Image (cartoon, rainbow, N blue to C red):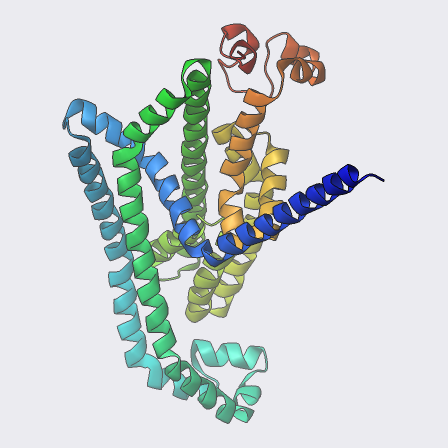
Length: 379
């Protein structure tokens, strides 16, 4: 082998090693800054969701975009604050009532009377509780000592919320300017393609958010009906908490079941069992029927793609992966539709698609015959 071949091989090896090291450094940086990146992604979701409303306010009421954005954000903040008051005030009253009744409940539980005592007796837990009084007291002391960590987590959560709000505000205000500058740099058919991708992606994210809200509304209404029929107090407040928790895909209904089930067992063991059975059945219906069907219509994806995307993303990325799975799948579909050559797509399409009927993943008005496909943009 000549010296030139040796130098070429060494150069290629160095390039490969450099690419591997750069990839590892990039992944390490992403991992170290994952909290900030999550804030940016969440802020972008909120910005996309609120941007159409800001545009409407700017066209009809306020000319300056910063002022229109501020009005929309203030209205959103007032709505969330009112929702928080509806939840927090009854909960504080209930906590105060529970604190007043706590000594009586403890005496009844030790004597095997009252709802807690009857529950302990039914499941033969009273003797176990009496035998482990010391461990329970030590556990309570550990909870008291963890107050500092709880306060620290609360402060970090508040800081995260404020950061997300500021980022979303700046994204909405600066969005048209950034978009115009990017399209001007692209120019020609590339600008038109980028504009089309941006509009389709924004429509996908908006559809995902609206579909998620619809699923949470269904969950909240169903929970209210079950709690009202079983006589659980504060059924409306608990149902609202469940609806908010259900915004989290896959595990949201489980978190809601913990809240509603606890309230049901405090009311009566029968009510608690009924509530838990309801949530076991409902979670299966939501995960395998409601979410795939509603999301498939909202983001123009078939139900199988929705379900597989959520399951895989939840396994790989946890909670944040489950939240971003559906919009990521929708945006991936848009990119594939734009950049995959039209000939290969047509070869794989069924006769109905080639005739212009469209499939479950192709929204209306985006057929090859309307002059807006990626094949017409190649240049």
